[in-house]
Image (tube, rainbow, N blue to C red; front, side, top):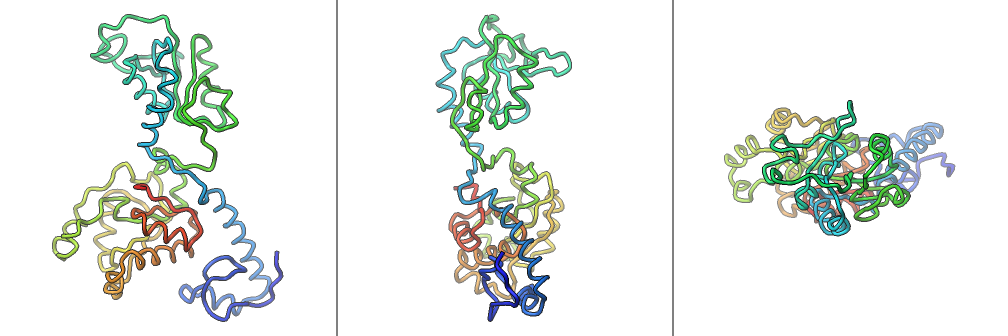
Amino acid sequence: MEDIHECQCAQAGYCEFFRQEMTYDPPNWQWCQETSKSERDQYKRDLDKKHGRAKLFNSNSEYIKSSHLIEDCKNLLLPQIARLNIKGILGIPRSGMLPASLIATWLNLPLYAMNHSSHKLEVMSGYSRSGGWRMKDREPSSGKILVVDDTIFSGSAIADMREKINEGVLYAVVYAHPDSLDKVDFFGRELKPPHLLEWHFFNSNHTTRTLFDLDGIFCPNVPYKKCKNEEEYIDYIKNVEPFYHRIPSKSCHGIVTARLDKYRDITEEWLERHKIKYESLKMYPAEKEEIRDRNHIHEAANFKAKHFMLSNAHIFVESEPPEARIIRERSSKLVICPEE
């Protein structure tokens, strides 16, 4: 570690030594000016650990949308298995049931789940012994069971399934870690780490290290015409339905929004009503509304980037692609834009 006895920065701004913004508010630049070498060294060590954790997710990280899962299952995995002699599809809960259900529907095959007490297969519908109204006339087949999961990393889930079913079984995943290709019979494509999966992300521990935009992420953006009418705007943000598939199951690191701070009470009530938990809520200063509105993209993005750089968050989830690019360029950290 480079030895530094005193602050090298003449004013607040980006510090090459600490590799972060040193600001007036909060006063971390003033602190560095006055602190001791030992305290500065300890702060540097703590920051280096933080930067190391952040490298786990970087600009090369891949974010897989749920729509990508469907398309990759259909275009990459399905052609490999469509002509096989398969008598049914067994999904590995929970996320493996997503591609398993798709494949069973596309190939008109029974969909099964494993009873983990008896280790017997159970059809996923009681209408017929093959499951579902469209399967009522299907005759039992002598083919194999295809076990399906969304991904394979270490292979523990499939290894567990092999102990329970050891005959007449094939294994397939949509996404396979390069080191686990030999653990399955079929896969859609290789997926190297680090990566994030939309259908897991909002129910994972990643949200505890993530800052989120508000409008466009947790709920639809406010229609432009309603933004021009104060009464309609307030009514909209009070009553808009959330994107239920993006409500985090855990408390998120924070929310940073260009929505004006004068709407804080309404916003906090809406978040509480929809059980969106967060550690902090940063809203754009109301007194700077005209500045924001003159160049909304840059002002909103710079506001979000500033709070991202000052935080311990590793990821920012932003709704607007132009703002996402600016936040990424300023912070040099991972920014996810789900719509792009």
